Amino acid sequence: MPPNSIHSLNELEQKFHDHFYNADNETKLTDLTSVRQGRDESIHEYFKRFKDIKNRCFNLLLFEKDLADLALAGLSSSYREKFDGFDHYSINQLQVRALSQEVRFKREKESYKPHRSNTHIVEYDSDLSDDEEKEVYATEFVWPTAAKACSCVSLKLTQKNW
Image 1 (cartoon, rainbow, N blue to C red):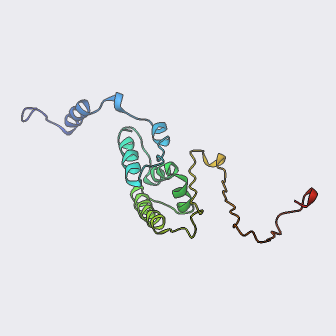
Image 2 (tube, helix red, strand yellow):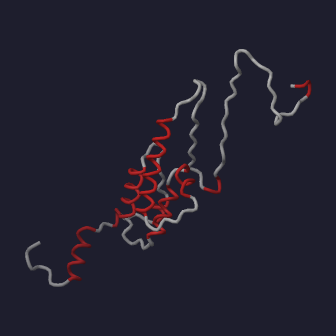
Image 3 (tube, rainbow, N blue to C red):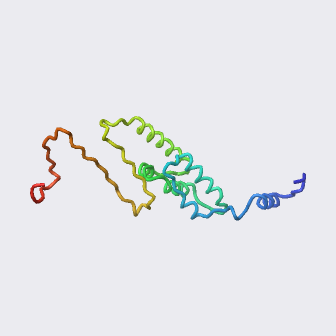
């Protein structure tokens, strides 16, 4: 623009808006609420994507706490469970907590050494909403080669004493 072509703040705002605002790129609140952390997506990548979408919601007026709640809802279930009951007053506060938790998860996973070769870590992640969330339990029974008699009081005898 040529020098001295703008004579008021309102005119500057209008020129800025005309130049940068494109309604085709605007996202809605529904776009923001549908953002979910991908299975192999890091916390940093998730929050970057969340904030990019939030920044394209030009007419969205939300408090920081509400944005933090939306971001929390999009985190994978393992992170959501860790932060259940905590108040997050800003999206940046939530991001810092989630990043530190991600570091802890990685450290624990790297330091885990199974006692036996038949011990496995089972990970479960759900894209279901909270009211549809189901608990998943997994176990593996390995009988030693020299089978010793053992009993479990939780198991009941069936016909033929099996």
